[in-house]
Image 1: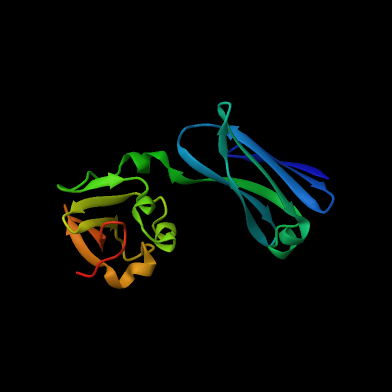
Image 2: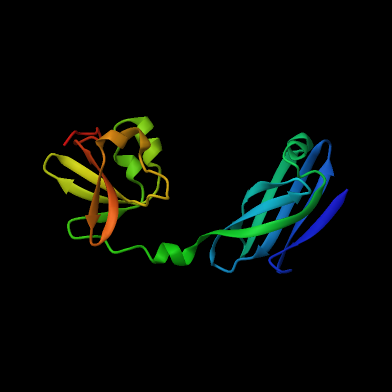
Length: 181
């Protein structure tokens, strides 16, 4: 069995092929430079994520193989369609707020952590860095309806307003160990 589904109003496509108990999915669409797109396989009873489209030779491509048993369990077997969805806009990235005085944006705060668990929790999400005599502080944008950053350090955090925006601030000693204030 081989099926082809249109993506983005016909500007792209996703082909699915059944092979030895697995479904091979291959998709392609134009690279419109708008941001990160993810692909989904649709079935009568569910929607299964296929992953991100990656830039390749001026196009966005996706390739994934999934066991039929997984698709059946998630309601996507047999497939009835496919979707591509813009999940992260490049415009959002360009609109990052300016850094408040004394702070600077860093792209990978996890590298400053002394503990692997904290480095993993910090991830590669951008944060504000403030260097201090007793170490440094990291500030993450805060929203009550969003995920809380650095969850293992919840008790060390405080919410502050910087330049009219709310941030969660975490203090650290040199070497990336949390400090109590």
